[in-house]
Image (tube, rainbow, N blue to C red):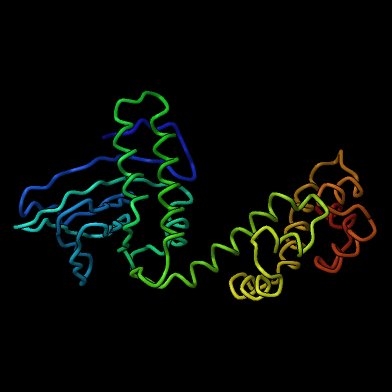
Length: 268
């Protein structure tokens, strides 16, 4: 089923569908220019990528990444039936990594029924009009959320590092949305539901700086952009990036940039 493109940026669905394969049905070797996920509703088959071959069955799924040569084939005795969805977007790779999927780990397993329902609901959008792509994108987000929640001892991959990335990304998103308010590191940690010291540890491991320093860096970088607006005073800029006290803002700015805000504006 082809999809009308209405320019969804983070995730954009290209196609989706279902297929009851005949015995020995195969596709490839071939490449795609978008991400493609297959979820097996029943039966068996194999998926090949690089030098690896995976034997898959009901409740397994596999990911095909752009420009990756792959081949898949239905079992000759018990051929599989699968649903698929093709997508791309600026956040596609990031969301897949958080879910534990990529070229090195293209396989997942989920048998709780929720993901199956997501794909079944996707097939029901065939007769929809202009809202089809938005509905499909919403179902794709629900699929990712369940795949992340499903990570545990029975999953085919180790998601520990991906969970850390998820928490750090959540903290960064909170900072970007709230930097202009009087937020603290405690507020940032609360937004992730993590202990402050633990968040600080994984945040620094992944970004190289503490949450507090990241917040300062972000505010100062934003202030530098606002300096180009001559209608804003230094005090206006300080308040716009979360500092009620212009003197404190100037002190922090100078410590980071080795120059005062007014001199920075003059030099620019």
